[in-house]
Image (cartoon, rainbow over all chains, first blue to last red; front, side):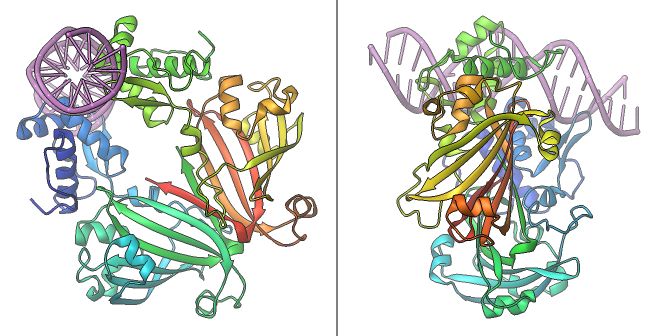
Length: 242
Length: 242
DNA sequence: GAGTGGTCTAGACCACTTC
DNA sequence: AAGTGGTCTAGACCACTCG
């Protein structure tokens, strides 16, 4: 039922196989957000497993932010996960109004040969590059360059702009069955080159913040590399450790 | 057996009570690093619990980075946790040589009344302030101001310099029974004031990176607030999400 | 071979939600 | 009242480490 992004069984423990199967079924769109998945008992019966084993698998997906359990009610697909986890940075200094999601403008999407550093991270030369500009408080604040492997995201470059929307990770999940489960970020500071300065509406040579991110799916395979640049004086990066 | 930082029992689930008890006994120094804790079976017998319940408690402490399990061998106190988790940022741009821990120079330690923002975070006015300068590659790269509540760290300001060492969190654990389990970081960008510039060996007004951190113990109580400043061009912050 | 952690079972009772 | 997840038990067998 739906190809997983992960590898073969290879006689992994049952709870890992079940976790991967559930993640794949979620990715395949078997349940809508806020719709209950089968109960622990049901999954146990259907999979010829004991309830304890099922609970272990489900709990892992809860820890990873994919699912949500409500006592007495059921286990649910957790859509707002995307805001709460991988989107909790990039809050700007002048954001008094809570954490609204910035708008996005797609500048370009193009299949291409990956720059060498990117190819190394993603393990392939054949990628799609996305250029994007994100606005906040009616001003551009983040210029992004995003690379995803063509073999996982074939057809992405041809999707209508309006289907892409302001957030990419939900698109990855719903259209390509790729669930972004974790990421490594690196924050540093530099100065704007001409292109970046023009996009951000600042002067060339002005201070910018740079975020480089590698994103991984549930099995640990890198599925995206991106670099984002924004004006340093409006920048604030939040991170929870441990 | 040693006061815990956490609250009363209040009939919490057994696995949480055991987790807190184990954390307290670790904090009290009952086991040295790389020394095996009692086995799951033993803990189960002594606590009149089933093995499954013990495993759940121990697993939580493993997830939190306090313990380490080695199949066939035992469960161990994990000292290098400090390098691997809460110390994996602050790698500088010119660090080709792997992740050596920077040296630290204590500038001052002093009991004082907390600035209002700090008092709010820590929930007390009575704090100890630590000023510290960290060197990397023989140059200063981080000027830190650290605040800890006097009621938890009474006597810290009087400890001999040499006992404090380059890393604070191990000192918190070994001398005061406070295990730092998580932290919130905020990275932003600014310019150096006179004092900071002098300490870092740069010019006033030069670009600096600012990291503000709130650290929490296992029960979620804030136990430290710090602000660190370093030259922006040498700065690199790493973070793993999810 | 004895002891350890890793996986798994087949139940039990409880707290909670839903109807 | 029925169904759900939350906790807990008392075992089992396996993979692994260590003396």
